[in-house]
Length: 312
Image 1 (cartoon, rainbow, N blue to C red):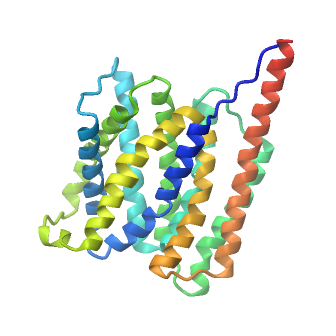
Image 2 (tube, rainbow, N blue to C red):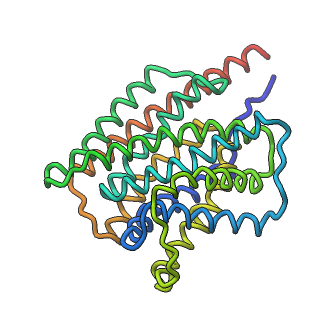
């Protein structure tokens, strides 16, 4: 009899919980920094700090075997660093941290769709589509909540919706990079390099103020260190390892915890208002995401038993 192997590991789940706990509060730090910095400045300084930290930890060049694999790193840097965070930071200018935190939780759905076409062993099911529909209802409630207070801004909410689609591309690319067994710190640093490189054209259109006086406040220093060292250098390494261990789809289930963490932290720190509409919307989003992800688990279980029966 052949034993059933589970693709996940205890280490992967623990790393995922740790990463999501930190990422769920990054919206709050970014919102605080937006009082004195532009979205592009926050993005640039954050990943410069992260890149330097990773160089200090792993001061060796990360070589690749072909241009095709180099293109994977380039695409991951463009999507996972430059585009995703730029779109997300700009969204925070126009809408609340709670809105952004909940809307970007749709990333697992986009990841599942892309994985269906570009990764082996993933298919869409009816249960997945039902879960997606329920989650979309929740996201609509969250987005329209501001209209009840006459504070809705479609630009910010639309940008927040585009961001997870870009993140899904990054997840698929990192899964492809992960199976090639590159050192994770070196691989993450290379992704950061291309992310910073792709930011350069954007910097031409935005004014970057290199005023050292802006970095003298404790709040500014602490939030940039949190974003650069913790949420970028550390968490990108741990999350990339999670994707490698659990896979793009299975790891994405932890993104469902982001809205809960973000809503709680934005309420405690930013004193943002939470209404019953937000609570219902967040609940629907999480429930729909759970239904969609559980379909993947059930399918894996059926496939595993099918393989077991064929080998007995």
